[in-house]
Structures are given as structure tokens and as C-alpha cells.
Image 1 (spheres, rainbow, N blue to C red):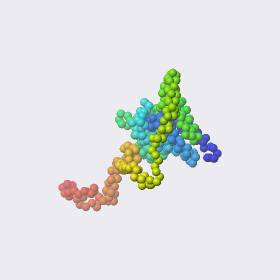
Image 2 (tube, rainbow, N blue to C red):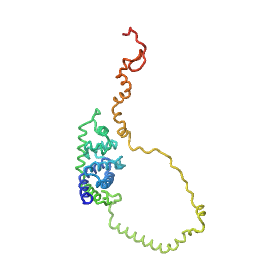
Image 3 (tube, rainbow, N blue to C red):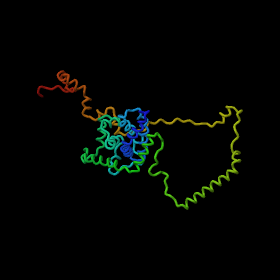
Image 4 (cartoon, rainbow, N blue to C red):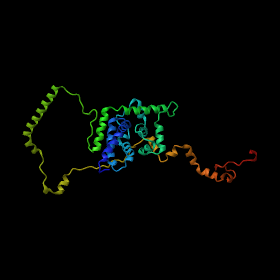
Length: 322
């Protein structure tokens, strides 16, 4: 497939099919369209390197795994902002928000979302439960979920034409293997146009500055070499160079623990004992497993006088108590 030229055509068709959902996913995950576009471009280029060696059936999972793993999508952008109908996304933790957007925007089935998010079924469902809107009683609100899904689909339909044109250029540059990146919608150095008279004065000042610099260089250039120090004497030897060398102070940096990447909510979802922590009743039973095993083995009948079935000693009962 690599030698016949079919891979670029298939790659272009695949990216064309996922780019709208991908660009909205990246924008809503980071809260900033520019940050999302950078993450999408990096994911497209990384996917291009993997696509030729991966079966086409694995392309969707491979692409979404690369996009979700982008460093810019692991936390909120500096100027994060969300549409009014999707303001709930801003209060969610990034891992929980990624699980929600994988369902509502990317449209991934549960088995695919579990793979690309790196979660098991229980943690994935727990993340969706945490992301779901709640009613006044604190229970999941189906109507709120429906409004959230409709707002996400409306954002997909309302992508402006200029944004779609930029997506097409991103796709084609990725398929072609070029590093050309389309400019942002409003360049950072953009300024309002000035009157033509002002532009003439700027050109005149520029010409005068160039001419003045040339005249100054004519008189100063020969004298510049007198300011330079004389070259070192090679016969002075390495010892003289060592004595004249500047001293360099070296100080070890203090050790510090690494910065945390995720908060307590994600730590609970990724805990190795998540299944046990999510079932407190089962955990309580597990803590007394030895007692229940002894009880099932007939320990009640063999308990010595004055000891109850739970293993605690009690005063001996009298016949009057019975």
C-alpha cells in the first residue's frame, strides 16, 4: 500500500472524515481554539507517521489516542472559554471532560472510548456519571444531558467556513508532509492600516537612517579594529590560559517533588483498587473475610465457654438469663 500511492489518498479521506469532530474536540477540551488547532496539527502529523504501518481498521482508535494524549489538551488553556450552552465543560476536570467529549463530540462507542482514554469500563462509566448534569436532588438529569448533547452537535454544524478552509489546508499539508502551517484568523502582529501620507514619511525616515548608517560606517569602520584586544600569545602556554580563565561557581539545584499532573478526582479514577473503593460495602466484608470463613467452617459450634461467635470474650451467662 505504501508503494502504490494509495496511502496518501486514503489518509486524506480519513482525515477529511474526522477533522470537524477532531477540531471541535480539541477546542472544547482545551477551551481555546488556537491551542486546539496546535494539538490537532501535532496529532495529524504523528498519525501520518503511524498510518502506513497500521491496518486501516485501527486508524480511528490510533488517531483519537494521539489527539487525546496531546500535552495541550491535558489541562485548561491560559485563556480558556466555552460557549454559553457548554459552560458546564469548564467546571469538569480534564480527564472527565475528555470522557464526555469522546462520547458527545467524537462519537466514539464505549469499547473504543475505553481504549483511547486508557480506562476500564467501570472508570469510564464513573467519569460519564461525574460529567452528567444533575437535578436539584443530586441525581443524573437526562434532560440536562440531552441539552448538552444538542449543544455539542450545534457547535459542529456551526463551524464557520473560514475555519473549515483552515482545516482543509492543515489536512493537505499533513498529507503532503510539508511543515507549512496556516496563519491564525487574526495575526498577533496585526495593526490597523495607516494613511498613505504616514507611510511616505516612514519610508523617507528609513532611507535617511540607511544613508546615515552608511556614512558613519565609512569613518568608524577602520577605527573599530583598534578597540579589539590583541590576540593571545601562543607561547604563553596552557598554564597562563588556566590562570587567566574566569572562575565558574557551580551549585546543585535543590531537589523538589515533581508537579502533580492530575487532581484527586483523576487519582481516584486511576487508582489500582478503584473497584474496591467504589464498593464500600464489599470492602467492609473483605476486611472481615477471616471471621466469615471461620464462621462458615463451624466456628460457632466450637466456640469455648464465655466466647461469642465474633471472637470476643463475655461474662459467662447464667441459667437465669435463659
